[in-house]
Length: 195
Image (cartoon, rainbow, N blue to C red; front, side, top):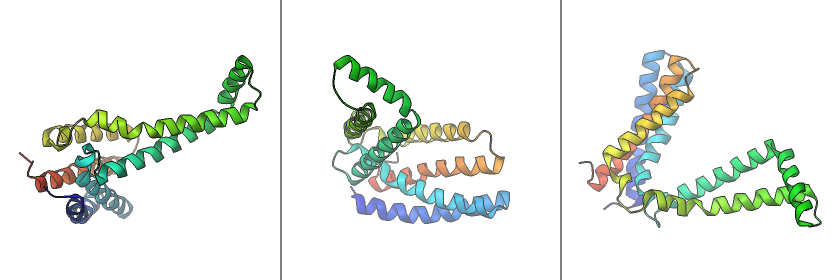
């Protein structure tokens, strides 16, 4: 079976082809250069991610390490953003906890420490959560049918998220998400698991 460098090399090649194809298709359909450029960049990234994604199910793989790190960063940023938006509520909860426990600490510091601790715990649970979801190497992430359904669900989600946009913008967004599956097929083809 090919290793990460092989999947990444073919993923980059597929990304170039899909970038040109997606940009050309969007420009042909809508004659909008900025959407064509966005389609090219997005399709390139989605195809590459699709080409390395199936190995997320192996605990020691490079894609798993990269996915874990990326999700940890996203969790921390999301929790920091949420904490910033709801800081007064968190401080009020901290004041209640400080009063109840009798601890002598500034409520703002307790709120910040609580958010930081929660973010670190959540970040630490990312890799075990991926392990629970994927369970075994060469499981559902290496199944073309399941990955087609997953990509379809992602495209459906993108359709819902882009409902208020123009047809050109919505088509571009959904098309970019769909190129993820091309990357998955590159990976599965290299592994001999298409059928």
